[in-house]
Length: 187
Ligand code: GRF
Image (spheres, rainbow, N blue to C red):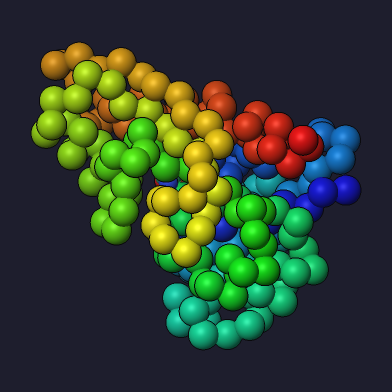
């Protein structure tokens, strides 16, 4: 069995979609959903999905080895699904090319510190972009700069708002993220 741990800070729609996709998979198991936010909705989803979950404060994530030790036992791959904290360096070192993130824009555009969630979609709208998309990439020590694995695009019109852009991105994420993870870990 290939073990996956998901790290998420928010609603967790991607985490749930990934968990559902792999629930019947022959050689992949989601072992844990881990969060740095004790009130994140993703924890409710974990309960419903009967997946173990655990919360680490930002300080615990940064300064302690407990999370690293748990991941060493419970994960072959780590998936970041709306995880807003920088991944601690000791974890990046222990999991080279085994940490995968999804970013709601076409990197290298609209990446970097502060570029998450609606901030991204508002910036895309302000610049009157004709298209946006998703980027699935490996995680290294810099925000949003690891090697790109996959991108998918969505066309935009002048009528799009940050909210409709978010919906388009959400559809792309639901369609592609689990499948791309499956391809990477089984290749
Ligand atoms: C997604 O848009 C993802 O691309 C980004 O954060 C959002 C998380 O949404 N990194 P959810 O928590 O999976 O619903």
